[in-house]
Amino acid sequence: MHRWQPKLGLIQETLLLTLHARALDARQPSPILGDTLSADLDSRIDYDFGKLKVKPNLVLTTALRAKKLDDVVRAYVAAHPGCVVLDLGCGLDTRVFRCAPPPGVDWYDIDFPEVVKLRAECLPGRSHPVAADLTTSDWLTAIPGDRPAMIVAEGLLPFMPGDSFQTMTRALAGHFPSGELALNGYTRFAAWAMKYHPTIKALGIKAAQGFDDPREPESWGAGLELVEEQILTRAPETARFPQPLRALTRFAARSTALSRQGARILRYRF
Image: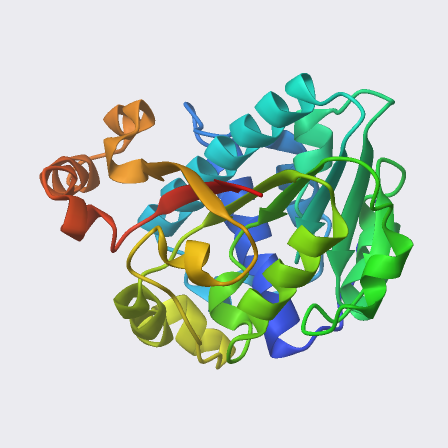
């Protein structure tokens, strides 16, 4: 069996964290996401995953947010069968395989050149790979701008410096006639606290930014309108969390302010 030996920078190495979390979920008796392709890929990568110190709560929240974002993508594609889908900072995410878009949909997986190269080796064939620095906008010339777009940004916000996420969002909204942006939102506190998370500390990464009010992106000048905020502590899947995490999650779900410090999915139209 062929094994891959990824050579990645610290920011890019986070793709192995989320891959491993999805793989650990898939190996559970009752998985949240059940991404068996990630589990297979994880087993074929030559990397010391133990150093990431992945805890059960990270496995569960990673799987749950991926599942909810998949649901958003599937619903949009069903309503816009000729759309384009952009998975920003895709890493080794298998979303295109999980969502299985119909032939009329053009799917673009976008990430750093070294990540796109690794992805082409590990996950070929189902999407258009685009090597890009997302703090610039020149890569958009490779994307058709005459169709509605579903844009997914999972785990991307905290790792983009300064106001580059807002700048990118304005460029994307201006490129397409209409579309939706879906992301997992981080509050400012949650983004700040990430640097103390054992896994993030293990990689030596300092998280950058977040926002508290889900309507704040409406002020970015991108023409965004909040459609939905899903607070994941209130998702029905949390009933399958093991104790004591299930009890803690149910306690947090009583407070919107407290719940927002955890995982939430934000969906905007433009």
